[in-house]
Length: 359
Image 1 (cartoon, one colour):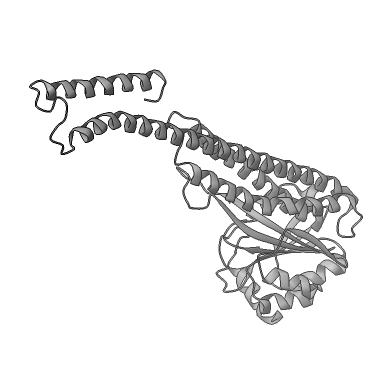
Image 2 (cartoon, rainbow, N blue to C red; image 1 turned 180 degrees about the vertical axis):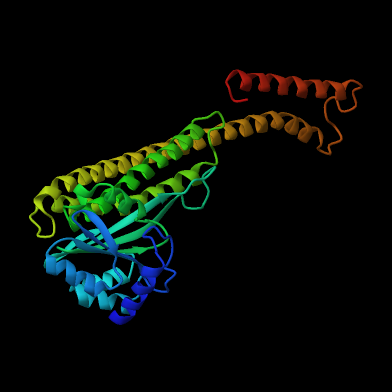
């Protein structure tokens, strides 16, 4: 496997492949990029992973950053052997749909992040407005291995930002892990702000003149999206707190303050999502109350018209009986008189209902 990985990276050295590539590597391998950093500066694309790691460990300076996209078990096995990755962490890295977490295996950290993206749309439909993916990172003293699942969560901007700040890269792989966490959490904040616009739109529709009678589905859709967002954000708070407060070999003390800032942002995003969910509950309750009031209004109108129609129905029913001896049956003015009485009775009842607000 390691020889196959070397051949894939050699081909990648002649044909540069960036970490921001949105899909699987055109090399036919899960390896998207392999880079070496020394003194905070990018040195070269490592054509030989084992050789590059050997040089880094021999000089005791710099680190290797390898990017993978949806690797298979066989593709990751060689790297796991070379870098001493724990089998349980490797298994989690291959099989996606993991809960956000940070686990420690000796001197190596295994981190799982849920990436999120807001899907632009004209109006809310059954289509999801929040897309999620997964981003995993193995962090050691002299290496970072990032694994991406899904077409989102590119690390190209993270790498470019780090390379523009060599003093940050000097802090080693922990600085890369912080940059990844900060990038992911910034996306959380951006998505929660975008979802707020959808909530405002639904709230405006519910309290509009028509009462937003068709908005129950949109409200439920937003609650589902918030639930998906909460699953990505909420579990990450405690692991980031541990990185910020507990002594971990892979995290130098000067980096812990940075993780504390990211943990604060996660807490803010979690609180914001909870507030949005409570607001949607209130909007849904208001919507249901409006629907109930509208139904009561409809029932009152139906009842009022039924009462009005009951008067001529009763009179016609009486005079429709087949009796030979009935008062005014053969009277010349009997027919117009009955019509006038029915019209007058309907008018009086209708006026009474209008005065009471039923019509």
